[in-house]
Image (cartoon, rainbow, N blue to C red; front, side, top):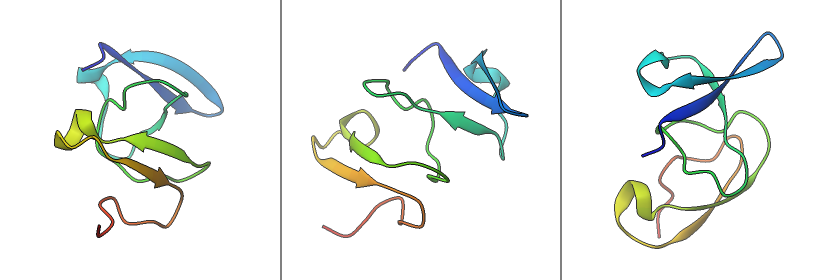
Length: 72
């Protein structure tokens, strides 16, 4: 797990400790970052290797309005 997350508030992105993340926070996950928490994509898109979350090395496309765990 990463030690920090990139939280966005009022158009400002700041590094915060994982213990400071709350439900409803918007986090930015940059390319090659390890996603610090489970959540829903609200903007942007990309491909995520879910091995850190599920233990399975599947690369899954992520975009807004997609379920967190698509059927395989």
